[in-house]
Image (cartoon, rainbow, N blue to C red):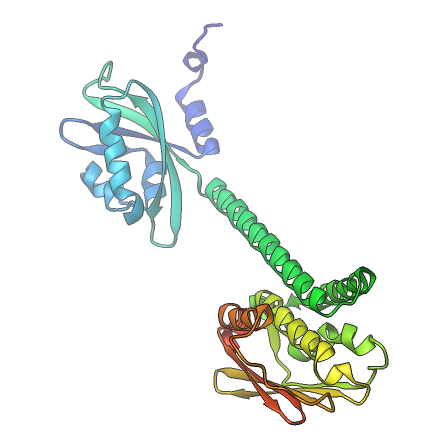
Length: 331
């Protein structure tokens, strides 16, 4: 038994081992730029096995975003002593593949001016890595959204609470309602993402206000049957809670005879929700630029829902009109 195990393998065994590992062999003549590969290499790069092939010809198959980097790396290998490895994308007729090029650098010890190395198809590994990165990014985004909505609900609830116990009860109810609202989000057919019905979402978000005191039956929701995407649900939740808190503190829901009606229509690419309060205390039109709640409504409507909100102070109560982009609402 020798230290070099390959001396005991015949060429057929080596070919089967390379095939099983998805390895292709290549050589590059550093003087005339001629590039040669085994059959697996030509299949991998989706190039014809006949005719002259230069390194520059092969470079044309490299993804434009990686091409200059790969050219520079291959040129540098002539001066780099030791093993090297570089991953890059290539464009085939049907898809984009990830290739890992590996070899031994330096012009020293090369035979007949030929540098040699291998190509590995690492598309599967790269796709898995990209999937993990997307998942990590999505998780980070979700955590930030949860922190944002928890902060917003805490601010909203603190303005309508009279004691720590009252705030704890209200905040718990609203967070529970938010959890139930997000439980409604289900996959849509045909891989169109996830959504909840708009009417169900609003009804559940308003449930804590409906259940408070003697409010049962005083809130009516009548909106078009349409989906709200998983992302838009967070922004819409903040808006609904802010409007409901204002109503509970100053508007129709602060009196026993007060009512709230939420209706909706679709006009072209715009979804219009109308929030109508009646039977509340005498309306006093606010003056000035507004506080935290007003800024929250404007930022959320513009940022999360690509829309706007206007509030008119009618003698019967607040009348808010929410204009939202239908496409953004579905995301």
